[in-house]
Image 1 (spheres, helix red, strand yellow):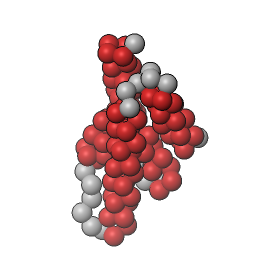
Image 2: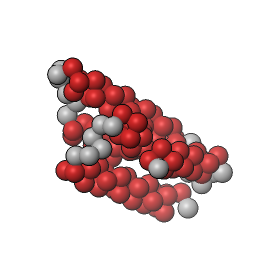
Image 3: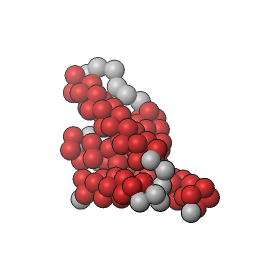
Image 4: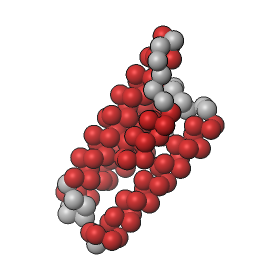
Amino acid sequence: MSIAVTAIFLGGVCLAAVDGVLPAAVPILYVAASAAAAIAYRLDKTAAQDGAWRTPETTLHILALVGGWPGALAAQRLLHHKSRKLSFQLVFWTTVALNCGALGWFWWTFVR
């Protein structure tokens, strides 16, 4: 389900840009931030397994907040990382809501 949400959201943002509903920079930002978030999750998972320096949770949340939440969501499910820690998930889903709200505000204020 998480992979489907990621694909549907990113696909929808890309289609909105193609249709002129959103500027082209928006899907570029989401795809780049999603890739960065997925890489950060992978590095953190590897570090956790190796007992090495970990990526701070704040960094993961900031990446989600700026638009990387689709990649973060996919990485959580594919890597089974940070998907069961309730305190992390509460903050993560708050960042998703804030990001989607910001996207809606941006569209409403500047684009429509």
